[in-house]
Image (tube, rainbow, N blue to C red; front, side, top):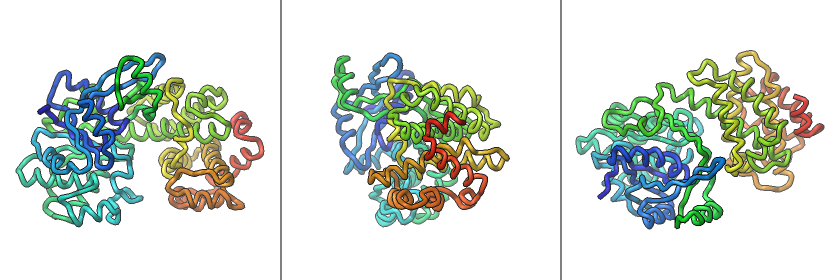
Length: 452
Protein backbone atom coordinates (compact mmCIF):
# COMPACT_ATOMS: atom_id res chain seq x y z
CA UNK A 1 0.00 0.00 0.00
CA UNK A 2 1.32 3.48 -0.92
CA UNK A 3 2.89 5.46 1.91
CA UNK A 4 0.77 8.24 3.40
CA UNK A 5 2.45 10.58 5.83
CA UNK A 6 -0.20 13.29 5.45
CA UNK A 7 -3.95 13.06 6.03
CA UNK A 8 -5.99 15.89 4.55
CA UNK A 9 -9.58 16.74 5.44
CA UNK A 10 -11.45 18.62 2.71
CA UNK A 11 -9.93 17.74 -0.69
CA UNK A 12 -11.65 20.56 -2.57
CA UNK A 13 -10.30 22.51 -5.52
CA UNK A 14 -8.07 24.83 -3.49
CA UNK A 15 -6.30 22.01 -1.66
CA UNK A 16 -5.81 20.03 -4.85
CA UNK A 17 -4.46 23.07 -6.73
CA UNK A 18 -2.32 24.41 -3.89
CA UNK A 19 -1.04 22.17 -1.07
CA UNK A 20 -1.14 19.03 -3.21
CA UNK A 21 1.11 20.72 -5.78
CA UNK A 22 3.76 21.37 -3.11
CA UNK A 23 3.49 17.80 -1.81
CA UNK A 24 3.65 16.38 -5.33
CA UNK A 25 7.03 18.10 -5.76
CA UNK A 26 8.16 16.91 -2.32
CA UNK A 27 7.37 13.31 -3.26
CA UNK A 28 9.93 13.43 -6.07
CA UNK A 29 12.64 13.36 -3.40
CA UNK A 30 10.86 11.73 -0.45
CA UNK A 31 8.08 9.17 -1.16
CA UNK A 32 6.90 8.97 2.48
CA UNK A 33 4.55 11.95 2.26
CA UNK A 34 1.67 10.80 0.08
CA UNK A 35 -1.70 12.30 1.01
CA UNK A 36 -4.74 10.40 2.24
CA UNK A 37 -7.78 12.46 1.23
CA UNK A 38 -10.78 12.53 3.59
CA UNK A 39 -14.16 14.07 2.81
CA UNK A 40 -16.52 14.15 5.79
CA UNK A 41 -19.59 15.30 3.86
CA UNK A 42 -19.58 14.70 0.13
CA UNK A 43 -18.45 11.55 -1.69
CA UNK A 44 -18.29 13.03 -5.21
CA UNK A 45 -14.69 14.22 -5.37
CA UNK A 46 -13.40 11.26 -3.37
CA UNK A 47 -15.07 8.78 -5.73
CA UNK A 48 -13.70 10.58 -8.78
CA UNK A 49 -10.20 10.66 -7.28
CA UNK A 50 -10.45 6.96 -6.51
CA UNK A 51 -11.51 6.22 -10.10
CA UNK A 52 -8.51 8.16 -11.37
CA UNK A 53 -6.09 6.60 -8.84
CA UNK A 54 -5.51 10.07 -7.37
CA UNK A 55 -4.25 11.55 -10.65
CA UNK A 56 -5.74 14.77 -12.02
CA UNK A 57 -4.74 17.81 -14.03
CA UNK A 58 -3.59 21.16 -12.65
CA UNK A 59 -3.94 24.01 -15.16
CA UNK A 60 -1.78 27.09 -14.47
CA UNK A 61 -3.62 30.07 -15.94
CA UNK A 62 -1.16 32.71 -17.07
CA UNK A 63 -0.32 34.42 -20.37
CA UNK A 64 -0.16 30.87 -21.69
CA UNK A 65 -1.95 28.00 -19.94
CA UNK A 66 0.25 25.10 -18.87
CA UNK A 67 -0.94 21.71 -17.64
CA UNK A 68 0.60 19.34 -15.12
CA UNK A 69 -0.56 15.98 -13.79
CA UNK A 70 -0.52 15.71 -9.99
CA UNK A 71 -0.41 12.39 -8.15
CA UNK A 72 0.14 13.28 -4.50
CA UNK A 73 -3.03 11.55 -3.23
CA UNK A 74 -2.65 7.85 -2.46
CA UNK A 75 -5.67 6.85 -0.37
CA UNK A 76 -9.28 8.04 -0.28
CA UNK A 77 -11.99 8.09 2.41
CA UNK A 78 -15.53 9.37 2.01
CA UNK A 79 -18.62 9.45 4.25
CA UNK A 80 -19.20 6.13 5.99
CA UNK A 81 -15.52 5.13 5.99
CA UNK A 82 -14.74 6.37 9.48
CA UNK A 83 -13.09 3.15 10.65
CA UNK A 84 -10.45 3.52 7.96
CA UNK A 85 -9.88 7.18 8.86
CA UNK A 86 -9.48 6.34 12.54
CA UNK A 87 -7.00 3.59 11.77
CA UNK A 88 -4.98 5.92 9.56
CA UNK A 89 -4.86 8.69 12.18
CA UNK A 90 -3.32 6.14 14.54
CA UNK A 91 -0.57 5.20 12.06
CA UNK A 92 2.82 6.43 13.39
CA UNK A 93 3.85 7.22 9.79
CA UNK A 94 1.23 10.00 9.70
CA UNK A 95 2.89 13.21 10.90
CA UNK A 96 0.65 15.93 9.41
CA UNK A 97 -3.16 16.19 9.47
CA UNK A 98 -4.06 19.20 7.32
CA UNK A 99 -7.43 20.74 6.55
CA UNK A 100 -9.28 23.03 4.16
CA UNK A 101 -12.89 22.79 5.36
CA UNK A 102 -13.72 26.55 5.17
CA UNK A 103 -13.97 28.70 8.27
CA UNK A 104 -17.40 27.35 9.17
CA UNK A 105 -16.01 23.79 9.21
CA UNK A 106 -14.19 24.46 12.49
CA UNK A 107 -17.42 25.03 14.45
CA UNK A 108 -16.20 28.28 16.00
CA UNK A 109 -18.27 31.00 17.63
CA UNK A 110 -18.06 34.65 16.64
CA UNK A 111 -15.19 35.31 19.06
CA UNK A 112 -13.12 32.45 17.61
CA UNK A 113 -13.73 29.99 20.45
CA UNK A 114 -15.34 26.57 20.06
CA UNK A 115 -19.11 26.81 19.60
CA UNK A 116 -20.32 24.23 22.11
CA UNK A 117 -23.85 24.68 20.82
CA UNK A 118 -22.97 23.78 17.25
CA UNK A 119 -24.96 20.67 16.23
CA UNK A 120 -21.80 18.82 15.11
CA UNK A 121 -20.03 19.49 18.42
CA UNK A 122 -23.14 18.51 20.39
CA UNK A 123 -23.22 15.23 18.41
CA UNK A 124 -19.52 14.53 18.91
CA UNK A 125 -19.53 15.19 22.65
CA UNK A 126 -22.39 12.72 22.96
CA UNK A 127 -20.66 10.10 20.76
CA UNK A 128 -16.91 10.93 20.62
CA UNK A 129 -15.99 7.61 18.94
CA UNK A 130 -18.04 8.53 15.84
CA UNK A 131 -17.28 12.19 15.20
CA UNK A 132 -18.70 14.25 12.37
CA UNK A 133 -16.68 17.45 12.95
CA UNK A 134 -13.03 18.07 12.15
CA UNK A 135 -12.42 19.06 15.78
CA UNK A 136 -13.95 15.76 16.92
CA UNK A 137 -11.79 13.77 14.48
CA UNK A 138 -8.59 15.48 15.58
CA UNK A 139 -9.38 14.86 19.24
CA UNK A 140 -10.21 11.19 18.57
CA UNK A 141 -7.02 10.66 16.56
CA UNK A 142 -4.90 12.29 19.25
CA UNK A 143 -6.68 10.30 21.96
CA UNK A 144 -5.85 7.03 20.17
CA UNK A 145 -2.21 8.04 19.71
CA UNK A 146 -1.86 8.95 23.38
CA UNK A 147 -3.34 5.59 24.39
CA UNK A 148 -0.88 3.81 22.07
CA UNK A 149 2.11 5.74 23.43
CA UNK A 150 2.69 7.53 20.10
CA UNK A 151 3.75 11.11 19.49
CA UNK A 152 0.93 13.35 18.32
CA UNK A 153 0.52 14.28 14.68
CA UNK A 154 0.64 17.98 13.76
CA UNK A 155 -2.71 19.52 12.75
CA UNK A 156 -2.15 22.06 9.96
CA UNK A 157 -5.09 24.38 9.32
CA UNK A 158 -4.89 25.80 5.79
CA UNK A 159 -8.04 27.91 5.82
CA UNK A 160 -8.12 31.70 5.78
CA UNK A 161 -8.54 32.54 9.45
CA UNK A 162 -6.45 34.92 11.51
CA UNK A 163 -4.22 32.89 13.88
CA UNK A 164 -5.73 29.74 12.40
CA UNK A 165 -3.46 27.29 14.20
CA UNK A 166 -3.98 28.87 17.59
CA UNK A 167 -7.74 28.94 17.13
CA UNK A 168 -7.84 25.30 16.04
CA UNK A 169 -5.61 24.25 18.93
CA UNK A 170 -7.76 26.06 21.47
CA UNK A 171 -10.92 24.49 20.00
CA UNK A 172 -9.49 20.95 20.12
CA UNK A 173 -8.26 21.39 23.71
CA UNK A 174 -11.64 22.82 24.78
CA UNK A 175 -13.47 19.92 23.13
CA UNK A 176 -11.12 17.30 24.60
CA UNK A 177 -11.51 18.82 28.05
CA UNK A 178 -15.24 18.10 27.90
CA UNK A 179 -14.41 14.42 27.43
CA UNK A 180 -11.19 13.79 29.34
CA UNK A 181 -9.23 16.41 31.28
CA UNK A 182 -5.99 14.42 31.09
CA UNK A 183 -6.32 14.16 27.30
CA UNK A 184 -6.85 17.91 27.05
CA UNK A 185 -3.71 18.56 29.11
CA UNK A 186 -1.70 16.11 26.96
CA UNK A 187 -2.86 17.77 23.74
CA UNK A 188 -2.11 21.24 25.10
CA UNK A 189 1.36 20.17 26.21
CA UNK A 190 2.43 17.89 23.37
CA UNK A 191 0.63 18.87 20.16
CA UNK A 192 1.83 21.72 17.94
CA UNK A 193 -0.79 23.69 16.01
CA UNK A 194 1.21 25.95 13.63
CA UNK A 195 -0.30 29.08 12.14
CA UNK A 196 -0.33 29.11 8.35
CA UNK A 197 -1.17 31.40 5.45
CA UNK A 198 -2.09 30.18 1.97
CA UNK A 199 -2.45 32.24 -1.19
CA UNK A 200 -3.27 31.48 -4.81
CA UNK A 201 -6.32 32.56 -6.78
CA UNK A 202 -8.17 29.35 -7.63
CA UNK A 203 -11.29 29.61 -9.81
CA UNK A 204 -14.02 27.00 -9.58
CA UNK A 205 -13.72 24.10 -12.00
CA UNK A 206 -15.97 24.69 -15.02
CA UNK A 207 -17.01 22.77 -18.10
CA UNK A 208 -14.74 25.04 -20.15
CA UNK A 209 -11.77 23.90 -18.05
CA UNK A 210 -12.75 20.28 -18.58
CA UNK A 211 -12.97 20.91 -22.35
CA UNK A 212 -9.57 22.62 -22.34
CA UNK A 213 -8.01 19.67 -20.53
CA UNK A 214 -9.76 17.18 -22.82
CA UNK A 215 -8.57 19.06 -25.92
CA UNK A 216 -4.99 18.77 -24.63
CA UNK A 217 -5.39 14.99 -24.42
CA UNK A 218 -6.33 14.50 -20.76
CA UNK A 219 -9.47 12.54 -19.87
CA UNK A 220 -10.14 14.05 -16.45
CA UNK A 221 -13.33 14.42 -14.40
CA UNK A 222 -11.76 16.65 -11.75
CA UNK A 223 -9.19 19.07 -13.17
CA UNK A 224 -8.34 22.16 -11.15
CA UNK A 225 -6.80 25.51 -12.08
CA UNK A 226 -5.03 28.40 -10.40
CA UNK A 227 -2.90 31.40 -11.21
CA UNK A 228 0.87 30.97 -11.54
CA UNK A 229 1.52 32.69 -8.20
CA UNK A 230 1.32 30.51 -5.12
CA UNK A 231 2.44 30.97 -1.52
CA UNK A 232 2.26 28.71 1.53
CA UNK A 233 3.61 30.18 4.78
CA UNK A 234 3.92 27.86 7.80
CA UNK A 235 5.00 28.86 11.29
CA UNK A 236 8.50 27.54 11.85
CA UNK A 237 7.61 25.22 14.73
CA UNK A 238 7.15 21.86 12.97
CA UNK A 239 8.47 19.04 15.20
CA UNK A 240 11.33 16.69 14.22
CA UNK A 241 10.24 14.04 11.75
CA UNK A 242 7.96 16.38 9.82
CA UNK A 243 8.16 16.57 6.02
CA UNK A 244 10.74 18.97 4.58
CA UNK A 245 8.13 21.37 3.24
CA UNK A 246 10.71 24.10 2.69
CA UNK A 247 12.39 21.96 0.02
CA UNK A 248 9.15 22.15 -1.98
CA UNK A 249 8.89 25.93 -1.72
CA UNK A 250 6.96 26.40 1.53
CA UNK A 251 8.16 29.43 3.52
CA UNK A 252 8.82 28.62 7.19
CA UNK A 253 8.39 31.90 9.05
CA UNK A 254 8.74 33.05 12.64
CA UNK A 255 5.91 35.57 12.17
CA UNK A 256 3.09 34.19 10.03
CA UNK A 257 0.95 37.03 11.35
CA UNK A 258 2.82 39.58 9.24
CA UNK A 259 2.03 37.63 6.07
CA UNK A 260 -1.51 37.06 7.26
CA UNK A 261 -2.19 40.74 7.91
CA UNK A 262 -0.63 41.78 4.60
CA UNK A 263 -2.76 39.30 2.70
CA UNK A 264 -5.96 40.20 4.50
CA UNK A 265 -5.54 43.95 4.20
CA UNK A 266 -3.77 44.30 0.84
CA UNK A 267 -4.92 41.35 -1.27
CA UNK A 268 -8.32 40.64 0.27
CA UNK A 269 -8.94 44.31 1.03
CA UNK A 270 -8.20 45.31 -2.56
CA UNK A 271 -10.44 42.48 -3.79
CA UNK A 272 -13.38 43.84 -1.78
CA UNK A 273 -12.69 47.41 -2.92
CA UNK A 274 -12.70 46.28 -6.55
CA UNK A 275 -15.80 44.14 -6.02
CA UNK A 276 -18.18 46.75 -4.64
CA UNK A 277 -16.96 49.70 -6.69
CA UNK A 278 -16.59 47.55 -9.81
CA UNK A 279 -20.10 46.10 -9.54
CA UNK A 280 -21.62 49.57 -9.10
CA UNK A 281 -19.75 50.79 -12.18
CA UNK A 282 -20.81 47.72 -14.19
CA UNK A 283 -17.74 45.45 -14.30
CA UNK A 284 -17.97 41.67 -13.94
CA UNK A 285 -14.46 40.35 -13.22
CA UNK A 286 -11.35 41.46 -11.35
CA UNK A 287 -9.30 41.69 -14.55
CA UNK A 288 -12.01 43.81 -16.23
CA UNK A 289 -12.13 46.14 -13.23
CA UNK A 290 -8.33 46.46 -13.25
CA UNK A 291 -8.47 47.41 -16.94
CA UNK A 292 -10.51 50.46 -15.87
CA UNK A 293 -7.67 52.97 -15.44
CA UNK A 294 -9.45 55.29 -13.03
CA UNK A 295 -10.67 52.47 -10.79
CA UNK A 296 -7.31 50.66 -10.84
CA UNK A 297 -5.53 53.90 -9.99
CA UNK A 298 -7.83 54.58 -7.07
CA UNK A 299 -7.34 51.05 -5.71
CA UNK A 300 -3.57 51.32 -6.10
CA UNK A 301 -3.47 54.62 -4.20
CA UNK A 302 -5.61 53.14 -1.41
CA UNK A 303 -3.35 50.11 -1.15
CA UNK A 304 -0.01 51.91 -1.31
CA UNK A 305 -0.83 55.05 0.69
CA UNK A 306 -3.62 54.07 3.10
CA UNK A 307 -3.52 50.31 3.68
CA UNK A 308 0.24 49.65 3.62
CA UNK A 309 0.77 52.40 6.19
CA UNK A 310 -1.17 50.38 8.77
CA UNK A 311 1.11 47.35 8.33
CA UNK A 312 4.49 49.01 8.89
CA UNK A 313 6.92 48.05 10.24
CA UNK A 314 6.86 44.62 8.58
CA UNK A 315 9.38 41.92 7.61
CA UNK A 316 7.80 42.09 4.14
CA UNK A 317 8.60 44.66 1.47
CA UNK A 318 5.06 46.00 1.53
CA UNK A 319 5.31 48.11 -1.62
CA UNK A 320 6.75 45.22 -3.64
CA UNK A 321 4.11 42.89 -2.21
CA UNK A 322 1.36 45.34 -3.16
CA UNK A 323 2.74 45.77 -6.67
CA UNK A 324 2.83 42.02 -7.19
CA UNK A 325 -0.77 41.62 -6.06
CA UNK A 326 -2.07 44.38 -8.32
CA UNK A 327 -0.24 42.77 -11.25
CA UNK A 328 -1.83 39.41 -10.41
CA UNK A 329 -5.26 41.05 -10.49
CA UNK A 330 -4.64 42.06 -14.13
CA UNK A 331 -4.30 38.44 -15.28
CA UNK A 332 -7.04 38.06 -17.94
CA UNK A 333 -6.85 34.25 -17.78
CA UNK A 334 -8.38 34.29 -14.27
CA UNK A 335 -12.11 34.91 -14.60
CA UNK A 336 -12.56 35.87 -10.93
CA UNK A 337 -16.08 37.25 -10.66
CA UNK A 338 -16.67 40.36 -8.60
CA UNK A 339 -20.07 39.02 -7.59
CA UNK A 340 -18.41 36.05 -5.89
CA UNK A 341 -15.97 38.30 -4.00
CA UNK A 342 -18.94 40.44 -2.90
CA UNK A 343 -20.54 37.49 -1.06
CA UNK A 344 -20.46 37.48 2.75
CA UNK A 345 -19.44 41.12 3.06
CA UNK A 346 -20.56 41.34 6.68
CA UNK A 347 -18.04 38.60 7.54
CA UNK A 348 -15.18 39.85 5.38
CA UNK A 349 -15.19 43.63 5.78
CA UNK A 350 -14.22 43.73 9.49
CA UNK A 351 -10.92 42.01 8.67
CA UNK A 352 -10.37 43.40 5.19
CA UNK A 353 -11.17 47.09 5.73
CA UNK A 354 -12.45 48.00 9.20
CA UNK A 355 -9.27 46.92 11.03
CA UNK A 356 -7.31 49.09 8.60
CA UNK A 357 -9.64 52.04 9.27
CA UNK A 358 -9.41 51.58 13.04
CA UNK A 359 -5.60 51.54 12.91
CA UNK A 360 -5.58 54.62 10.65
CA UNK A 361 -7.77 56.54 13.08
CA UNK A 362 -5.62 55.51 16.02
CA UNK A 363 -2.57 56.83 14.16
CA UNK A 364 -4.35 60.14 13.55
CA UNK A 365 -4.78 59.69 9.80
CA UNK A 366 -7.90 60.59 7.85
CA UNK A 367 -10.04 57.82 6.34
CA UNK A 368 -11.84 59.69 3.54
CA UNK A 369 -10.51 57.36 0.81
CA UNK A 370 -10.97 54.22 2.92
CA UNK A 371 -14.62 55.19 3.49
CA UNK A 372 -15.38 54.99 -0.24
CA UNK A 373 -15.42 51.17 -0.58
CA UNK A 374 -17.55 50.90 2.57
CA UNK A 375 -20.00 53.36 1.02
CA UNK A 376 -19.96 51.21 -2.13
CA UNK A 377 -20.82 48.12 -0.06
CA UNK A 378 -23.70 49.98 1.57
CA UNK A 379 -25.06 51.10 -1.81
CA UNK A 380 -24.58 47.56 -3.15
CA UNK A 381 -26.66 46.19 -0.25
CA UNK A 382 -29.28 48.91 -0.78
CA UNK A 383 -29.48 48.16 -4.52
CA UNK A 384 -29.86 44.43 -3.97
CA UNK A 385 -32.44 44.88 -1.22
CA UNK A 386 -34.63 47.33 -3.11
CA UNK A 387 -34.51 45.21 -6.27
CA UNK A 388 -35.51 42.11 -4.29
CA UNK A 389 -32.26 40.46 -5.44
CA UNK A 390 -30.41 37.85 -3.40
CA UNK A 391 -27.86 39.00 -0.84
CA UNK A 392 -25.45 36.14 -0.21
CA UNK A 393 -24.47 36.75 3.40
CA UNK A 394 -25.11 35.13 6.81
CA UNK A 395 -26.80 38.42 7.82
CA UNK A 396 -28.84 38.60 4.60
CA UNK A 397 -32.19 39.24 6.30
CA UNK A 398 -30.87 42.07 8.47
CA UNK A 399 -28.92 43.59 5.57
CA UNK A 400 -32.03 43.54 3.38
CA UNK A 401 -34.08 45.19 6.14
CA UNK A 402 -31.50 47.96 6.53
CA UNK A 403 -31.15 48.33 2.76
CA UNK A 404 -34.89 48.93 2.34
CA UNK A 405 -35.10 51.41 5.22
CA UNK A 406 -35.36 55.19 4.86
CA UNK A 407 -31.71 55.59 5.94
CA UNK A 408 -29.71 52.49 4.90
CA UNK A 409 -26.39 53.92 6.11
CA UNK A 410 -27.67 54.48 9.63
CA UNK A 411 -29.35 51.07 9.62
CA UNK A 412 -26.21 49.25 8.52
CA UNK A 413 -24.03 51.07 11.05
CA UNK A 414 -26.18 49.64 13.85
CA UNK A 415 -25.10 46.07 12.96
CA UNK A 416 -22.67 45.33 15.77
CA UNK A 417 -21.59 42.05 14.14
CA UNK A 418 -19.98 44.30 11.49
CA UNK A 419 -19.37 47.72 13.07
CA UNK A 420 -18.28 47.84 16.72
CA UNK A 421 -19.81 50.74 18.63
CA UNK A 422 -16.45 52.46 19.19
CA UNK A 423 -16.09 52.75 15.39
CA UNK A 424 -19.71 53.28 14.30
CA UNK A 425 -20.17 56.11 16.80
CA UNK A 426 -16.84 57.80 16.06
CA UNK A 427 -17.51 60.97 14.01
CA UNK A 428 -14.08 60.61 12.38
CA UNK A 429 -15.41 57.40 10.79
CA UNK A 430 -19.13 57.99 10.51
CA UNK A 431 -18.74 61.41 8.89
CA UNK A 432 -16.56 60.22 5.96
CA UNK A 433 -18.79 57.16 5.37
CA UNK A 434 -21.94 59.29 5.26
CA UNK A 435 -20.22 61.86 3.02
CA UNK A 436 -18.90 59.20 0.61
CA UNK A 437 -22.32 57.56 0.39
CA UNK A 438 -24.05 60.85 -0.31
CA UNK A 439 -21.44 61.85 -2.91
CA UNK A 440 -21.69 58.49 -4.63
CA UNK A 441 -25.48 58.81 -4.82
CA UNK A 442 -25.18 62.32 -6.26
CA UNK A 443 -22.17 61.93 -8.57
CA UNK A 444 -21.97 58.19 -9.17
CA UNK A 445 -19.02 55.98 -8.21
CA UNK A 446 -16.85 56.88 -11.18
CA UNK A 447 -17.12 60.63 -10.68
CA UNK A 448 -16.41 60.24 -6.96
CA UNK A 449 -13.29 58.19 -7.68
CA UNK A 450 -12.11 60.79 -10.18
CA UNK A 451 -12.61 63.55 -7.60
CA UNK A 452 -10.37 61.68 -5.14
